[in-house]
Image 1 (cartoon, rainbow, N blue to C red):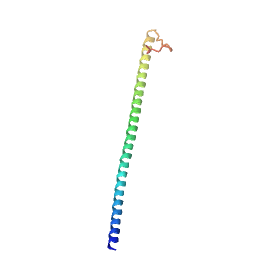
Image 2: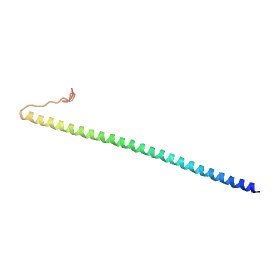
Image 3: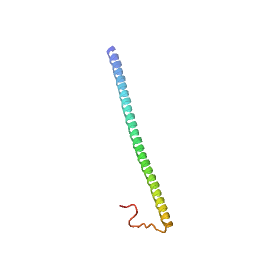
Image 4: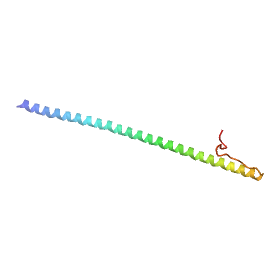
Length: 101
């Protein structure tokens, strides 16, 4: 009878230890999953940041190009005005713009 009680207690202790191991394993898996999610979140953040940086660079380049184009057009207008004052005219051909090579 005593041996059955000892075996019963030993069985409960073994089940308890197995459940602790299972809980520890689940915690470890949850930690790995959390690390993986954080890594994915960081990758998405970096990809979005890179995308924003590229869009900002393109935007700055477009603004710079627009300003350059406006400046060139104003210089052409100034030159045309000076030529007109001296009785000359500036002829720009549509099929061959002034800046083509």
